[in-house]
Image: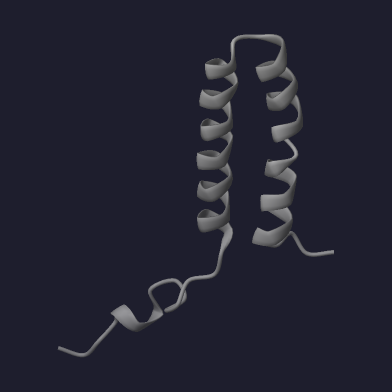
Length: 64
C-alpha cells in the first residue's frame, strides 16, 4: 500500500476527533483555534506529499 497525499490527509483529519472533544470540554474558542491549526497542518501535509508538475527540477538543466 502506497502512502499517498489522500491517505496522509485522511490520517491528519483524524486529529479532528480529539479537537472536538477538547472544544466541548473547554471554552469554545480554544476548540476553534485548534481546528484551524489542524486544518492548516493537514493542508500543508497534502501539499508537501502531492506530486509536482515538473518533477524534481529535471527541466532546469538547459543548454546555455
